[in-house]
Amino acid sequence: MTRRRWLADQVEADRAYLVGEHAMHLSRVLRAQPGQEFDLATSEGVFKAHILSVQEDRVEFQLGAVIPTPSTPNITLAIAIFKFDRMEWAIEKAVELGVSQIIPFIAARSEKHLAQAAAKRVDRWRRLVLQASEQSRRSAQPEVATPIHLEALLQHSAPNRIVLAETEQHVSLKDALQKPEFAPGLSGELALAIGPEGGWTPSELQKFTQAGWQPASLGSTILRAETAAIAALAIAMSQLQ
View 1 (tube, rainbow, N blue to C red):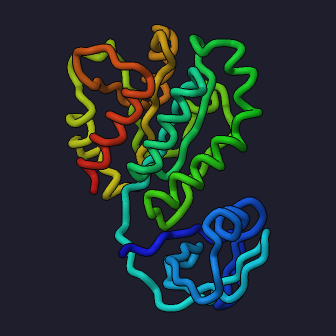
View 2: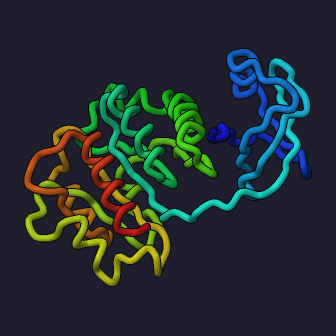
């Protein structure tokens, strides 16, 4: 039976801890007991670990042998803010697929009330990411950035940057990833930008190209924002792993 994996909140030498609400799920819901074995992911790697002590809001582990983990592509998903229930679904699935960072951003066609409320949702999104990371046995929790405006996103430092655009007629995402200049395996991080419901404005697409982003298409059909996010990430992962 596959051991459940947890992401440690604190690490001290060969001891690691889950604390707060994170620990409460293990202590209250799963009724953890000393001696039980789990996989524990830390900033130093993933370890076999067994529980030393259980308190309601603090569970202490003894770290054991290192568990080898495969490397994954470093992909940032920049996703324009849209309806929160569907956006949360997209975030959860992006984590399961292996995304490294998620950047929510405000585009011209982002609904104003959602854009205004987005900053208050970040803690919820980060909890969702933690849960999805443990469920999918990730070795690290992806970062969820504080929402930014499009102008800040344009200056993202990733050496490889692709904006998904339904108006692009010639270059598919797969084609873009096969170009020498878009080879994250050779030159680092890839950033993918997904537009809002209603799509990009012509002015936004012009700003992307002027800032050095490569436009690419996901095909001839019009996809919902959450579908586009997952399709783009799945294609990128399959091409780069």
